[in-house]
Length: 308
Image 1 (cartoon, rainbow, N blue to C red):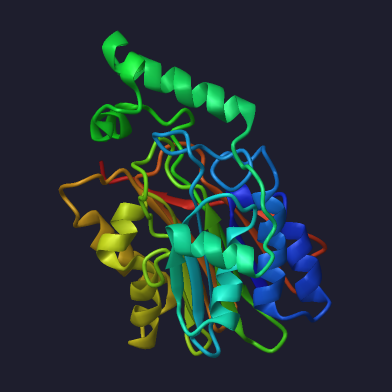
Image 2 (tube, rainbow, N blue to C red):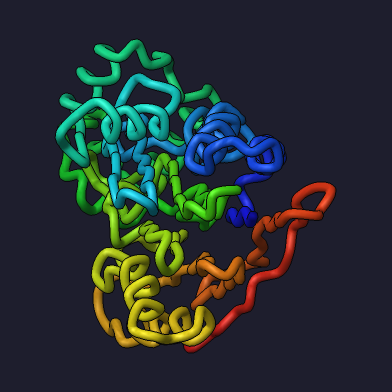
């Protein structure tokens, strides 16, 4: 068995590893670990304590994929609920759909009895307004939110320079490969923005015949290149895991316009190999890894490729 997750997985990675070690279903193990991440205010880009959109609203995204059945579930721009990954899973199990967004996602969350709550903590609210004040004239501050939002969304600086997600990937005792994600998205994003996390094939993809992939950081890039599906497809075409990831890096590096800050790819194959490569992402990039025989997950350094 194998478990792979990004750096922000620390509140839940040991829970997922424990459940896998006890023989639980892989996707369930990932979901239960991510739920702990979603509740931890130290993780500022996921769930409770995340950064709001430009209007000061918390909009959460999440997704799951079962690599045996290729069933998926996803939610986007979900407001008022604590566990988008849980709601995404119920989309997969309870509906004949694959994705719900906005008001529809919230209606469904209420219908299934999902845990409701306000994810915007006081610190996030304070920092949000301070950043907006810096980007607005006094006249705009007086009339906010009745001002053009696009310039504010583009110019307000992410306080941590982090556009991240939590991503968990696994191969369980039955060799089923699964992936799950959760995020609050970019700080100060335009209302209704979806990143790659809830878009299957962009931010995540799993197929037990070949492997799985999930991305963090600049979701717009992964959307344009269908990065996660591309990695799995390259393995289907006969590439090794390493070569598949490097080929996807080439696809991303080809992007010359739009917002192209960087992407980190997390991938596993059906032989329990793993690969984490960061393209043009600033800072120290780490990830969490566990496999059968290890006492607990280890934090490791990602491979870094800088082309600009």
